[in-house]
View: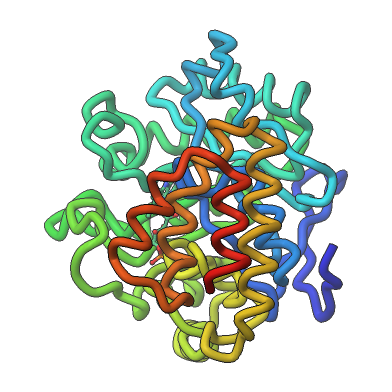
Length: 324
Ligand SMILES: Cc1cc2nc3c(=O)[nH]c(=O)nc-3n(C[C@H](O)[C@H](O)[C@H](O)COP(=O)(O)O)c2cc1C
């Protein structure tokens, strides 16, 4: 595991668990279909700080859904890791959190109040909860009081541009005893479009006393330093900028990395994917990562298409080793 120095260490209410944020070690964002165990291991090997799982539906946890179960498995080298869960029903969310704590034993459980996906919003979960502060309070109070490991939350700035309420929500989350707060500096109706509002992260950081993680539009090592300086946040969280580019966690730009090192990382990542999912699914799941890694290779569109449709992982690896 990466070494953590100058940590901002904080403790949850019963002092039983410690979690560290370090501005020198960016955090891997929760990304559905992307932040799986193989990618988290690659991120950690390249200097990522704490890691988040993909979001997991509370309903699936409680019903014992097999895919949800597989998504919640992690290896010791991924610690400290948080499993992120979402739901619209406080009781079921608590039940899901109890299962996560007892069965999977992550270092913290993160609650998603940030997802703008229509299917999640339509059932009143994710970012839809930003317009129901009382429900956020009800969920967070019961979780913090009953779950022993730290409870954290990830928010957006509001449900829409017309209902920006991040200070109110941040205050509630802090008041309920959350261990830290991650802020994606957009409103839910922005989706992934438009500018992020880093000024809002700064306002939240000045408003609450719990550690604040800044998130949104970090694509280059310079952006990490810029966000830390502009917002005063305790650590940054990186999503899309890390896909096919784990070197960003060590604050290295992709251009600095030798082709040999890139190939080693690509093949290590593929190997992890194959060993988690088996040969067929492993290669299939790896494709979306390779699409981003391929930006580092001098590869024509047809060569890329041929690799992205290749169904044999040995052929895939040999082509990377031999031709690029
Ligand atoms: C493919 C994809 C899946 C995502 N899934 C989740 C998720 O499961 N939970 C969550 O809180 N945010 C999710 N997000 C949002 C990211 O965590 C992050 O907030 C967002 O991408 C902004 O950060 P970035 O500009 O560094 O990508 C997802 C984003 C992407 C691109």
